[in-house]
Image (cartoon, rainbow, N blue to C red; front, side):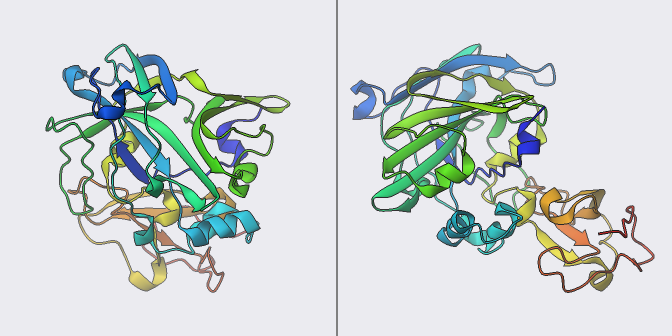
Length: 331
């Protein structure tokens, strides 16, 4: 049976677009006919307290990659796929400004979001004549009541807004995932790489849904009005979406463990797998030297025994004496 994780998707939400919520409509375009309406249920986990449900708002997160990364993916430069392509651009190049999008939102039991305007150009990849956007829906508690998602820096020790929900379909065992897409002009070649078994999407907004089955995957494309449920829970990965820098493993800083020495005193440490397409079953050490900071993922470094990017060194046969993780010596 094929799941989203096995399929090898690498999606990073790099641009948060703040949306209005709680039934309000902002701007002159509120009277226009919706370009796309998303509506569904909010599934509330027992792990979360919704005492501030009157401040829950909706937001779109757009996947935006630098041109060098997109070109690498389209040209299939590396057999490992997007993981190595992402490393071609500095982490700072994945930063994008927030842009407001006008919607309707109804909380806390159901939501209905009507997109009444086109995406900001900064949310799209590609060039004039062929542009593509990919987005997801999330929910957050607007802690300071300013009606927008306030993203925080790596050095911040707290966040005024807390992300509490994300659209369903992105857990490891999910059998169905949906993607909000926007097409402008000729179909961008990246669409065929990400969705090889799907029909061509039309101009404007649409939603692609993949269903993973025992025989492969099924794909549908819908427009105008689409059902899309959202999960609300106290999830650290959700909360990290309020950070300015992306929190994907592939963009974390990596160091050679035998060179830098033991992690600093007071840091948090955990052993785990890195990126399967790059490191296989090898264990790496995730170290956060600043556990007091809110953006734990962005402050984390990856201590390695092998150079997974260029293959210039391999210390697995003689790891440092302080190395706490299991060592796999076979390729």
